[in-house]
Image (cartoon, rainbow, N blue to C red; front, side, top):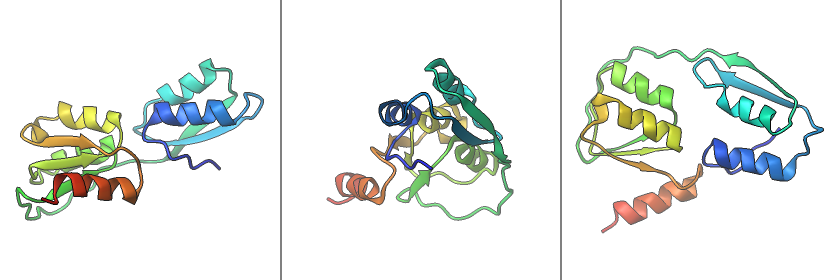
Length: 138
């Protein structure tokens, strides 16, 4: 199992190609809505990749909740952004997301058109704290 501190698929690919030889078979479960581009990129680089849908990703209908313009919304995936929009949930001024694909999805959705969208520099609480200190502490 690999748990690299990668912010996106490019960094994850770089980690794999720097640390794992192409003679190692890679097992790559993914969600039902994940694109196959990462697997294809690994295969193009010479890896033997077995990828499959490991879990179904389905939006859940939820009741509206109060959202203040001063709140901060953390979205971890494209499917979460789509679900938020499909549920018609309120949006604060600030949205933080993980990864450039998630950011691109958010920016493509009319629901988030008035939001300032930032990408965390990494997938850890340290980067979330860094964002908070840079953007909320005054």
